[in-house]
Length: 414
Image 1 (cartoon, rainbow, N blue to C red):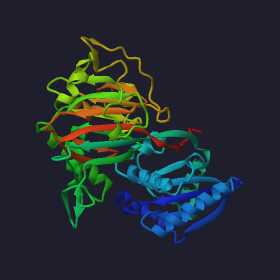
Image 2 (image 1 turned 90 degrees about the vertical axis):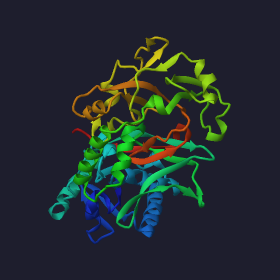
Image 3 (image 1 turned 180 degrees about the vertical axis):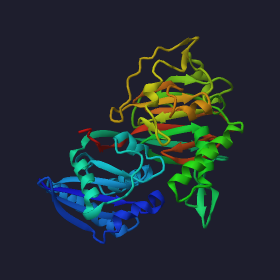
């Protein structure tokens, strides 16, 4: 059986270390491994013609019933970059599993698949190390992996989205635009996690000082965390009015105004008038006051804080009246069609999670779609897979399962 491996390389990842896979001075190499014919194709994501050519080649190989594997050389953001390119070219995800060589900063996607949080990029003499990688991909297990879609809308008159963008040698805050108008709805596809709160504020500050070194970036992130601990940060009760689950699938933002819903929780404090009647009908209240509302698709967060959902078993943050709900949730699986919501009630607990487990509290789990409503006159920070934004006067955020479902390569323990 013939195998074809397509390596899509982001040469800027890992402080430009990922580019080592483009220095072989060959677009294709062929050899036999374990009595199997192997074809490896190298593609720079910065070279549009190479991307187009190899995506067409993938489709041709799949039509010939060849075994095709896509390997992403980069960070978590590069994974979604490649997925978007495959989607645009109508590549069959069910027949084309995706693996990764981690070169990013957090590398949570790679960690949860078993490939670790970093790589040295050493191909070895006569490509010995590289061939060992290919052998591991050949032995890897194939697993379903859910993707999700997030739509955040802001007030039509006063709302906007801000992010940090590099301009020359400086990082500056910019207001997002579409067709020269201020953007009012931000749509993103998510693989790992989505959050609203102080962790996104830390990341927003981190983006202002981001470097080309993965090691230095971790130090910058740590310093930003210390800085934000000294500031007053808006909490979930101050920013979010409540969360609901829609009873109908595949609704857009424009269609959900009168859609039937179940209220999952309401927060304490003053809610928006348009939300108040619906929320008053619910007895479900979010207890505590989380500094971050975190939505998890995988069991790794922020560069290696693992199994957050499983480690807070029995800790439920939603009350029905005065009684806390019983924990009837199930274990997390990135291919089960469900997604999990947790909260952290303090920055210290959030920071300690990678060392001392069980600091989070469970809020919700399900297939969605989920609708988060915001309070008036707030400007919360949020993130999608490590891309950080600030929303000025947001109205709602809609989270639903994507029509795209990919296959991934998980590392075999044998």
